[in-house]
Image (cartoon, rainbow, N blue to C red; front, side, top):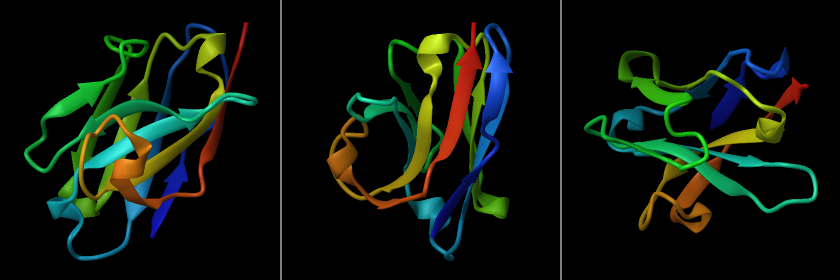
Length: 120
């Protein structure tokens, strides 16, 4: 089970940190990803971190967002800075199963999502 938290309303230029708490003893074995879906748009990849802490980012968030993980807490984080209105979306964390980190179909467990709204 994956449970996201930390979403909310923030002004443009602001920051938020999302958390995703995972249940299960094998969390450290999984790569974890963040995706987002804006209203009326398709879900898109945001960031991923694998078991050895290598990170991957969408070009649209590179340099502004940072993904990290704390295996002792079974938690993955998404630190978001310099937020813009186009970052407004529901953000989902997911546990990777197989295949490309950039593709949602490669993930087999998903959280319920947390809303991030950036006002201009």
